[in-house]
Image (cartoon, rainbow, N blue to C red):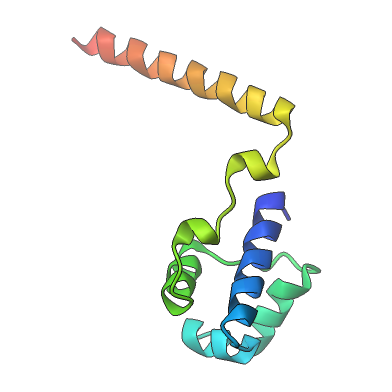
Length: 103
């Protein structure tokens, strides 16, 4: 499980508890079994929230999706960020070249 997945799960759990909601309440809202939520929050399985879940959870908890999903800077090392930036620049350069060829 990625660090981002772990952070999303931790953020959902923290905000859920702040609102006084149980795992059962969240499961009911998401139309899933309570065991699904318990498996996610245990961090021992590969279960995780999908974007549909995140959208519904943000509505239920009355928060922005950005409060659930961490920023890359918060879950990546400086080296990982540098490599991602380099790759992003390379991808944009390739896209620009392709677009210029079409003209």
